[in-house]
Amino acid sequence: MNKKKALLIGSRDESWEKLEEELVRLDYSVIKVSDGFDAYRVVEKEIPSFILIEVVPPKIVGFSICKLVKIRPMLSHIPVIVTVVNVDANLENLASKSGADAIIPYSTDPQAMLAELKKHTAV
Image 1: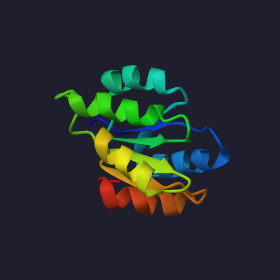
Image 2: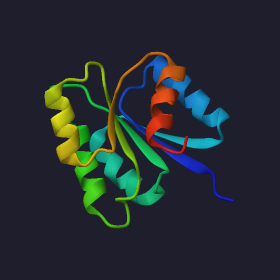
Image 3: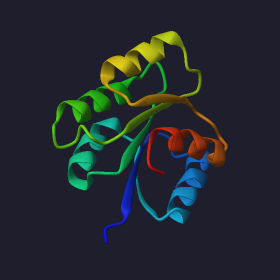
């Protein structure tokens, strides 16, 4: 049986390491990519169960990755969740236009992040 895959795009800080540990505990294989430009290649190769993208304004590369995933029929089913420190109307609009399945607040608490992910994915 193939293991579920989670693709985390963005930060490599301690809180994402803790989130990774929690996902591994839930039997996910976790793939981490720090560069948005490498992310699309990884998505095509790995076909993850879901994608979590950290968007840090003013660099909004994550929304471009989301668009690329959602326009490809073989990838468009993958839930793409965008996380930002401060969710505001402008970022919600960008997330919606890019095809993101959800935009959630970034948290340093892995349990809070998992709770948000569970609302939008099969985690």
